[in-house]
Image 1 (cartoon, rainbow, N blue to C red):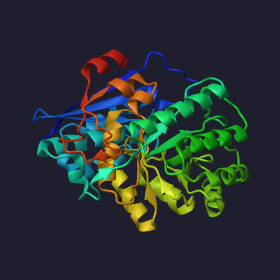
Image 2 (image 1 turned 180 degrees about the vertical axis):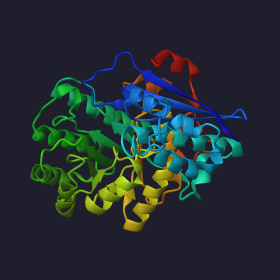
Image 3 (image 1 turned 90 degrees about the vertical axis):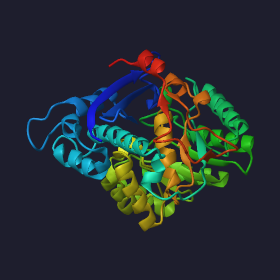
Image 4 (image 1 turned 120 degrees about the vertical axis):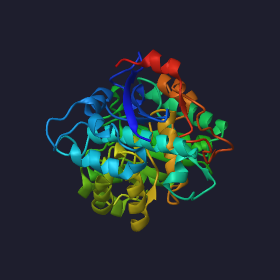
Amino acid sequence: MNVTGIDCHILLVPEYSVAANSSAQDNLVVEVHADNGLTGIGETDTNPWVAKACIEAPGTHVMGQGLKEMLLGRDPEDVETIWWDLYNGSKMTGRRGALICAMGAIDMALWDLRAKARDVPVHRLLDDPARDFITPYASLLPDGKTIAEYGDSLLYKLTTARDLGYRAAKLEICINGPYSHNGLQEDDALGVAMVEACRKAVGPDFTLMVDVAYSWPDRETALRVIQQLAPLDIFFLETPLDIDDLEGHAWLQERSPIPLAAGEWQNTHFEFEDLALRGKLDILQPDIGRVGGFTPAMKVRDLAARTNRLIVPHCWKTGIGIAASAHFAAVSPMCPYIEFLPANLSESALRQELTHDEIRLEDGVIPLPRQPGLGVELNRTALERYKVG
């Protein structure tokens, strides 16, 4: 089996908003074709125009080769070697950032392709299953352009998720800081009040997480608000500080009454070593597309095992990425949850329409995937409807 071609599809919802704290509005979907007639699919969560250029641009020297030209003719069974060849061959251009995200879509597609060739689900190639099912948490970004609308939307989405059978949810409290939703800049007390209202609505037995999207300007502010949230029994607090402030994260981790989580933006397992060993984060959150694919994600899993940390993979895209997270979680005993963006609670048409045969919630959990590959297929009608490049 050899790679014969790679297609890159840039997708964009027509009603996208640059003020939104949501990367589910666009996508880069990659299809890797083989000479046996099979196709693997992958996606990544970064600027899709930039990632496509990283794949298709030609190289001019050995330190900055093009990903596509290095991939063509290769055997997907050599996925580990391919990953390192792409990484090293593009090192002057890449190493981190959008090129690693592009590699993530390719690597995801290669694992899908080789699992389809063997007629087994991807997780069977990754490792032995660590569990019989996967527990998702509903990831909830409210709608609304005022703080009142935001709070009402959050409560509606949370109680709807509970009624749909979810046992856990993450509250996106993106009401201030550099990445606030729809330009909101509100006092942290209002965010704490939202979480209090949510806890009251779902009761003590429902698991809640909180994501503040790097909102706090310093470690002292973060600690003050976290201490106010602590009585509400929060499973983890996500991205409290600027992601490059590893010293601040380490300081905060030593004092925080709530476990701290981060890693959605990290590229390669090397960055997770910094996050775990220097930043001392309690919970690592690799995004399969952004980290560079399954190949480095498995190294993050091994890092978590060595350092006694939990993993909760990030995913804010479509059924492709959710399936990737599910396969990864299936073989990761330190992974209690995966992020799950419910299609019927998302404003993104891509999340709602792009895939068929999507992994589904049954009694609050996701059974282990059984279909070959990732177990999802592209909706070609939606692909063409939202394709812009």
